[in-house]
Image (tube, rainbow, N blue to C red; front, side, top):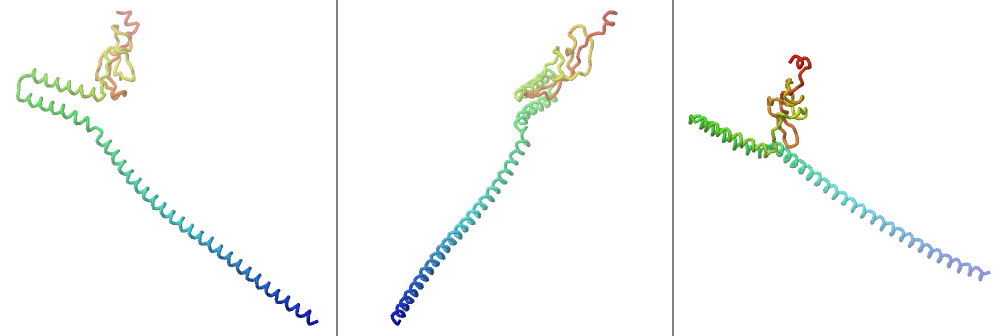
Length: 203
């Protein structure tokens, strides 16, 4: 009977040791899991910190780019405004030469009584002015004797005529001009029309 009790105590002792060992294993396991969780949390925190830093860096970069674009936009608008504002400058420089020539011709007209020289001076100024306009793409519309074209001409009146075909430009009242491929001023003209049959018979 005592032998059986001793064996039970031994078993109890063994069970106690097993329990303690299992407890230690569980504690170690929990410790490992906790450590692993802590490591994961640390990694997540580090990643969050990296993302926050990236976000801040990108936000700063975006703000700088927006500021740079606004500055570029203002500079471009100013340049465009200046282009439109001073677009006629090259032409003005050219026309000033002719303007000065005309002024000198007028001054000499007061000093001289030679009408012929004055007329030649005016003709020279006119020729230079015409040449300048042609260089800039301005040309006079040739209308006299041409068939009336509403794209180029403006009919002020119609006049009966047997000398030309109906709808022919008889007279140029005021010249017209094209600028490159655009009509900027229509030629004001008198256009022919056919005589009435009764008038022809009376004639």
